[in-house]
Image (tube, rainbow, N blue to C red; front, top):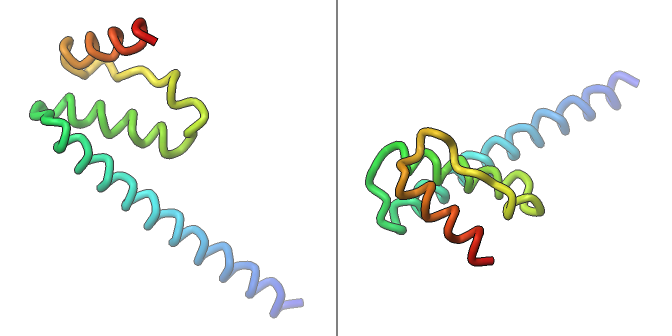
Length: 86
């Protein structure tokens, strides 16, 4: 019984470590993607990463994501235009 409990604990710990590595990798990819779009303002980059991570965590809900209030008006306006065009 102890062996089974230890195996279960090890499996949970290793899956948590893998999940954290995947999350960090996704966050780096989101940051690189934000920079590749030409964003320069830190608040815009942070808003882009926030949206990107929302999409990574719940891809089915990606179309409903909204930029944070910290994003520049230009970024928010661009997102609003994209939404109305669809």
